[in-house]
Length: 518
Image (cartoon, rainbow, N blue to C red; front, side, top):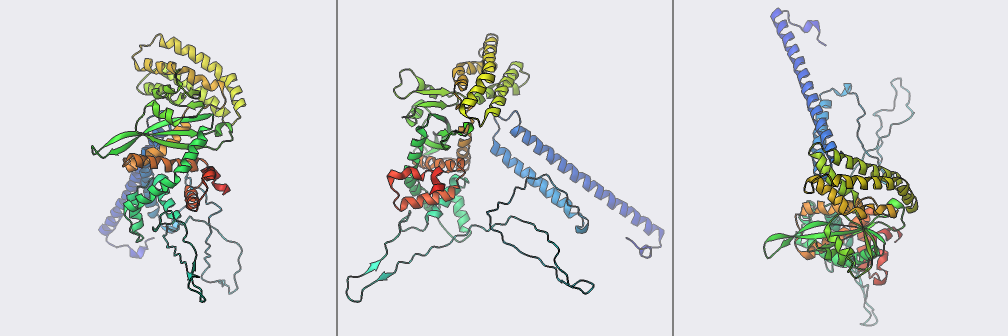
């Protein structure tokens, strides 16, 4: 507040002060308006990105790209909010609850308590103050990863009575003989590369900040040796999966460096997955990736050698090799994916008015609504629900399909989409005959996404053998995730058990879902 004594007596000076005050207030109004406008614009952008990522037209959206964009937008919004709060004097700030998912602090984390006492416990009246309550707040703190050195001493003992009585404890078994890392350090490198998608050269940069100077090739040597030791566990994993009678399969490209041409060639990771959780099956979930130099159906046949049962796949023609009449081997039935069928119709509806495609999307959506209500029930209950509710919709959709195929040009986008559904119709309706079958192939597509993210960060594998190591370790890491097992703890314990001579006949006890029982 201004005191009257501080005001000038000159009228012109008073007018100048008044004009300056009004201009200052106007500037503040303009600044606030601009700030609100920026916040509103950013909020609209966030809403638009979320709609694009999670709305109806999400089939061709890369979630990782949108996550990066959302991070930048939300960071910008937080900076504007902080700027807005900084303009308000500390005593006048009003704390407003914001709609943020702050998460919760787990009870197992150690608590480091600090008590902040008043400067004095003497009341203004001269009496002593006593505690009547307290306010408690918790904040998440972090201690950065710290490297340490394990020093192992093996004393030698000699006999004073003779010259032959020298005793020394045997050297412990190490994964990297005469090397620097413990098994926990190697496991950390594996998890950073295959779970957190940090290439080895970036890990070397992180280590150098703590004074640990290691060449990238040294880390690569650790990874290769670990992959070799873990190979029997991977073989046990894929063998366990193939003993199931219901699996998923999918493939994704894997660029691999071709040293002779100085270019990359295209290999493929084939994912074989088991996920019985939607129908409360007893087998633990798991996924095994196998690298192959091509995408031909012969690779799928080789990987599935010995498997018999239902294989849920997309519409890739290479899988037809598994069901040819002259094929020699156990019987395999192919269940196809409604998400792929729907995706073709969505592509058509996205480009303009398409009432037939939109009607097809609506019909498939009704099947998904029923499936969401049946998820988690036992196979028989799921089968009964499908027979009662979904079978009628499928029969009606078959008539709808025949009706529109006769009236739509075969070579048109809609004609091709309808032909795709008709081609795989028997496999698409197979879920009506078995409560274990899912309506789509999304389970295995989710497990294969980390491979794509790692591929983006690494650009390509350096060699076919490198891609095989990639597949081996990624299989164990992703299976850990499916079973809520910490990959770092698992790989540390497993590598330690292997170097200490774990019996080959008991290798199945090293599978990720058995980690907690060790």
